[in-house]
Amino acid sequence: MFSGSHLKELYGLPAFTFPGRGESAKLPEPDAVAWRIAAGVYGDEEGWVETFDRFCSAVDTTRVRALIVGIWEDAYDSGPSDVIEALVAARDRLPALRAVFLGDIESEECEISWITQTDVTPLLAGFPALEELGVRGGQELEFPAVRHDALRKLVMETGGLPVGVVRGVAASELPALEHLDLWLGTSWYGADSEAADLAPILSGARLPRLRHLALRNSEIQDEVAAAVASAPVVARLEVLDLSMGTFGDEGATALLGGQPLTHLKKLDLHHNYLSEPLRQRIRETLEPAGVELDLDKDDADWDKDDDGTVHRYVSVGE
Image (cartoon, rainbow, N blue to C red; front, top):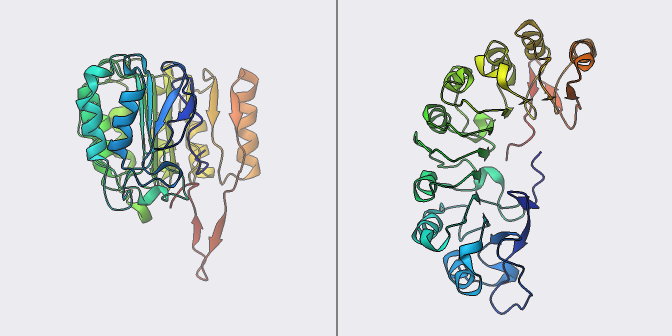
């Protein structure tokens, strides 16, 4: 779950923040960490691109395997186009780069749904060997359909994922992708997709190696669950994650009435609105088969209008 704090690791490497201008610190080996680069570290007013230029001068970038892009200037109002341009311009100096996370910005710096993004696919075009791409923030995010033969993991953490991004991911040719994690979010913060927009993902036709599918943090989690219940891609999954959203009895009934899920290693439904009878049915159906379950109600809460309308909330909105 999104904790509002910076990443602790990327690509299996511990995160290390490149020091701000004027700060002294012993630098680790270039390939031993995921380097976090951010504007204004420790109160310095240095811009992101300037910090990146210092990084390239101080570190043997030919050995760098993972980069974490922290806050850039005016993330509330401006996307990271300059950041992406700087990274792509330096691609010949980064031959070992395999993972990028764009927008490692904690809530005290900028709330997740106020992070301004941009078209992130130039990173995939510029780094054909990239294996992991993560993005935080959905405002102005774009992801037109692409083909990328090496990408194994794609993560998009948002409080509201635009339908154009969902459709772009769904239309992309990603034959090596094993792990897909989309935080669909709420209409309050720009989410406007429907379960039908996920159909190309759920068919699995363009994702032959997918083993971990997370479609979570959604205000239409029951509808997503109903679509997943009969989805061809599910038969090859090891992990199915429908957590962090408004998942309740309707979604649980659809899952239990659909194809068997006993082959899964894990089913993650934490932050849910399940009644105890449905919670118990899930346990009785899947635990004997050895499926690891996360049915923690977590911080799921609801309220009711005077007319009886019940409101459920996703885990991460603003």
